Image 1: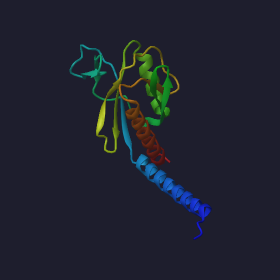
Image 2 (image 1 turned 120 degrees about the vertical axis):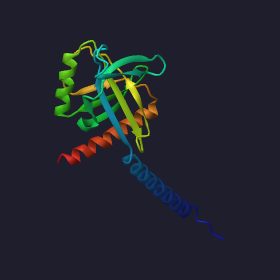
Image 3 (image 1 turned 135 degrees about the vertical axis):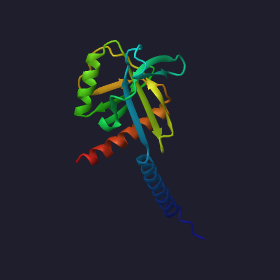
Image 4 (image 1 turned 90 degrees about the horizontal axis):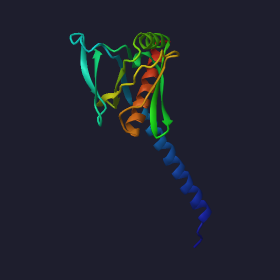
Length: 176
């Protein structure tokens, strides 16, 4: 009986490559279905309770911040998001469109020393979400880019960024 080892290896390699390609395609389809939401609020004066709400940011060492009810920016103003590596961890960077850049610059210039409160939702049906960060405004932010260290796991941050980028693509297609 003749055994054709080389032919068997070629066939096995072809099957493995086909399985890999099919698996990657399904992962891509699954990744395209991720959605995320982002809400950026500005800290308001603590004595104006009727126009705001007090939230708690951070799970391990909670910080209370009084914010306005309406967000100043959302994912509708987003161009893209990225997960950045930082010393000792990671950060999320979001880039806003022209209108979002103006709003970010205006609110950061008018509220030095206050905080932005960042709320994020992610998952296939926006089933996970919480207040992620409250970075203090130290200077006027020019250029429409905001980076913050989120109170979430790296996997949650990856899902958030993936969903935000999907939302940004949909926004760009809608605005064409």
